[in-house]
Length: 293
Image (tube, rainbow, N blue to C red; front, side, top):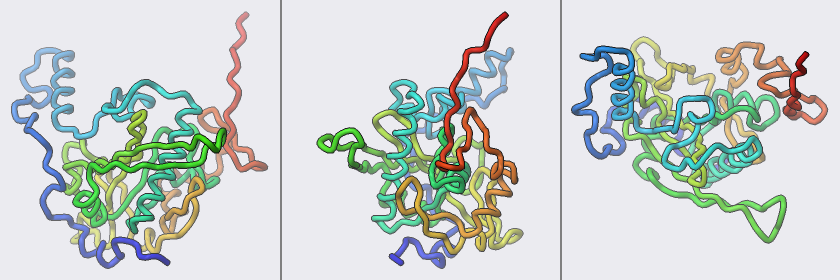
């Protein structure tokens, strides 16, 4: 098996991430912002103050906080994508991410709902706007030092025309607060993103570290309180995801059961889609117009 960076021993030795912040955020916008609720006289003013505070402290920004608008990066957002456009973007984005990191010998694996999609059929759940991956905090530190703010070009054959291959460009952006391994104010729980600069859709990347070795030795966690035993993560399993080589945690079944419970592994109709066991695909149900008397 090819060399993967970092080795488990290196990751274990480096999880506490006590070094300086990976990249210094420009400016100090938050210095003069009043924390939400202080000195405000009405709810509207309090909300405005909170948003100003959030905007000053949060590194990654989205054009809105709905399920749709909350999954684009503001810098590259040009408008909502259709169902098919979203699916096409996510497939190429995931393949580009996996292939790029594997070529560079950098260890990363699929997580959360993305892992659940893999469990069903090795693909993303078609209704899901979230794409989640994880890596060790040691690996996160590495990409912050050596790959932050780098652009990566991806080319794939087009299913419509062999003469016009698909070309996409992605930005790997590491949050300056990635080295801070506690949740803090909660505005920077996402450590890095792999962003399609064509439309702003992205993959969330979060690091795992042993944040409390005194009371929870051998337990890695992210800044959103997802916790994993190292023995459930390693050794990673080699697999395919969206047609590209990928890694999943060793005890993926236990991890999924703890996060989503058994129903996520047995329910066959969800979010307007029906599982078809013959094709092993989630089929979008036809929308019907309700009848009126």
